[in-house]
Image (tube, rainbow, N blue to C red; front, side, top):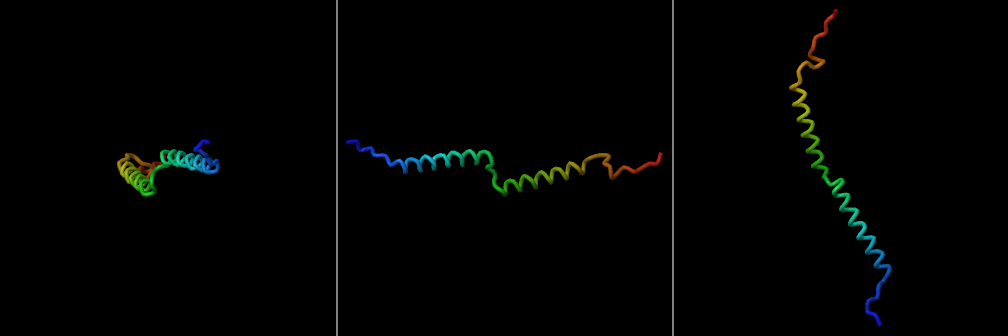
Amino acid sequence: MNDNVVNFNKARKAKARHKKVIKAAENRVKFGRKKSEKEKTAELTRKLQKKLDGHKLGSQKDTPKTDD
């Protein structure tokens, strides 16, 4: 008799676990940044935008209105 008896219930569950592991790996690649990393990036973006805005010439607020 053959010694390789397969429990189909365990095989089905193992297959499902394997699919979850694959999906989790794909999601880590797709969405894989921590909240702290996102916050650091957002803060750096705000800081650089503020610096850039400070170096603009002729903004709408600074120009005087003339009546022609």
